[in-house]
Amino acid sequence: MTQTQPIAPPRGTEAPRRTGASVEVDHVSRRYGAVTALQDASLRAAPGEMVAVTGHSASGKSTLLNLIGGLDQPSSGSVLIDGTEIWREPDVARHRRELVGFVFQQHFLLADLTARANIEVALIGAGMPRARRRARALELLGEVGLAHRGEHQPGQLSGGERQRVALARALANEPRLLLADEPTGALDTATSQRILDLLGELRARRGMTLIIVSYDEQVGERADRMLTVTDGVLTANQ
Image (tube, rainbow, N blue to C red; front, side, top):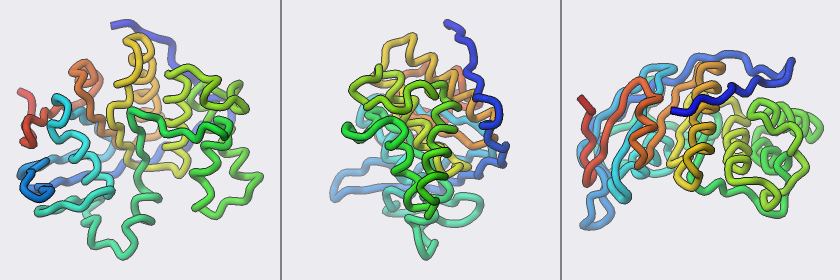
């Protein structure tokens, strides 16, 4: 496997190390009418652990991640973050915003905004003053090695750079749980490995829990554990 040099954040921008969140998926199923997307799935992730979930397209991987992140509600079973069941929270959106960061295969950057502004948008809900939002966005760009690209729009960036901006945006609210859905699916092999290197570095630096779903089994080589979803059934790899 090709090794790349780690990206060190500029001096003074290192995020303080925090304890990652614990995750407990307990006999969770998700049904959409007559279709069962996920069936009786159970998963445990300790604080700071990196778990990879692999499987073919439409196997149920993204459904699992959406349930863990509070983007979707289980048909049965429960999802607990730090011992608290997500859907018993009075404000699920706020709970999700303050605790979880999301990275997707498609970066979903706003084409008309600069890299810096795309990150700033994620900070508006935190009530942060404009000047502080700008400074925070620049800090995060430095952490992913893109301090020099802050005023470029997504169309001026490579695929790997766009994904790194999306990762910086996911870190904006200091999540203790980072969920990555096919973060390397649209990238070439070399760029994919650089993104995985960066994810590993950020996890080590920040102490956050990391769950990655991918059809690429090489992702599992970076993880503490690897699970597989097949036709909605989650199993542990031996």
